Image 1 (tube, rainbow, N blue to C red):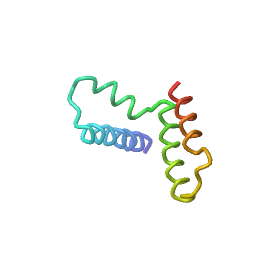
Image 2: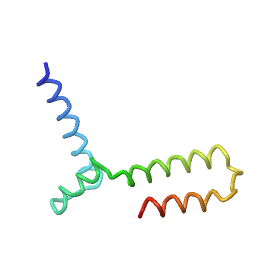
Image 3: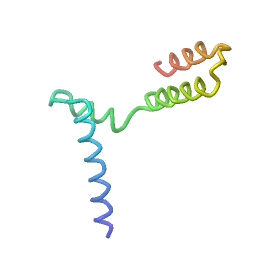
Image 4: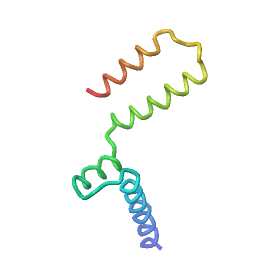
Length: 82
């Protein structure tokens, strides 16, 4: 039973890795680094992706809100990029 669960998890990870290769049409060069970055993104990458989603939601919900939103988003992005 435990082996089956571990195998299922490994199969899921393998399929996700294969999807990355297909999505970006990757060759062998730097594939290991790219897969590691894509499958285990840094906290700043994850935070930037979350920020993009939040920005889109704010703009959709409050299309008239412009009170410094661009500057706030720009400041957060700059901080996350280090």
